[in-house]
Picture 1 (cartoon, rainbow, N blue to C red):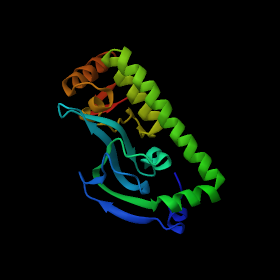
Picture 2: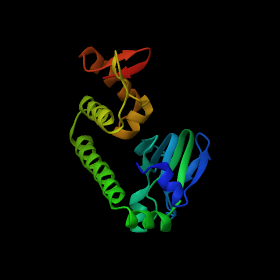
Picture 3: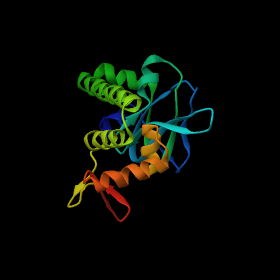
Picture 4: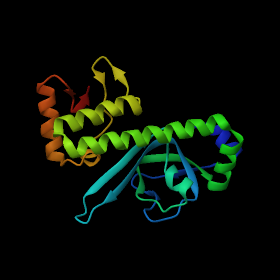
Length: 198
């Protein structure tokens, strides 16, 4: 995460996005660096059958959409506000200037991109070779590490809906629900007030 004050110093503007509104569309060329102040954003595609596949979910203080910005390629997915969100937008030119003038920030951006690439590689292998229980646990464990899910007396609260878990793992919602119940019976997960804990 880049300090909001630094982004604003380089000309970033705050913009509000209502729940379900589009931040950017698949096929458009990137013009901004995006960093979430509050809210939640998903990047997703739809297949020919109209089924959604979520590429990633991003939360407060996270950035999204950088690879096409660096490559000057069209966005491979849509970015949509999952809830009302406030986002900092920094123009591409100013973002590149910020990186050139701040080496430590550049390294943090590289680390962030490497983390996402690692996650995609791990999940691609998981989705092609493992059973639903393994896929769901791998996603949840990654979420705990990468998204800093909150821990309380019940364990880590998993901040994914059943639909999001399905869209992130390539499983149907019905399969996700059955899988979570099976994992609860095995003691791998807890379900308390319809919320999932690890």
